[in-house]
Length: 244
Image 1 (cartoon, rainbow, N blue to C red):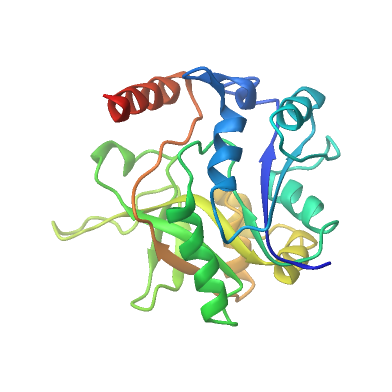
Image 2 (tube, rainbow, N blue to C red):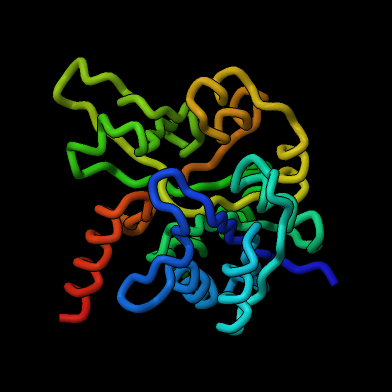
């Protein structure tokens, strides 16, 4: 049976800045389970799979009632892990939900799926959010996005774009999940990296360099992606605030 929407959460045990990141407990709950439980709340998602190269992560997911798929260890990126899993589960759309984004939920995922359904020419949709923390503008770990009046991506960069020649400059960042038409994801994953993609280390540039459109969908809120111990502290502080 072909699903309408498959969500895949890539989860790799190794991490340069935060080893064993998917298993780190935040507020008593392992990071990967926080992400999985958030995606499961989405009524537009028909099946959720955690694609991982590690038995420990797979066992934790299965014990929590989720579905895990063990992938080859030599896959070069999370996107390749998602494509590997998607190739084995027929669907119309595929969501790539970052395994380090524990605040993901229906309000972030459903607009992306709606964008794909509304326009057959949209083969990839992602979220963008206006930057409000000045330190994020120059942070190379924050991917900046520029797009046209219709929401079509023009470029993504780790550098501050646009360059602030005037005080009117506004910056947007890419956050959260990607939504793909499955056939395009499988095509994309089989293509070699492109020069700009290699220069910036950003997969989205492979799509733009090959002449395909990316739809930038306004995010309803910000998120906290976990890359460093400081991010863990920020999330714990946020969660404590929401409970108070």
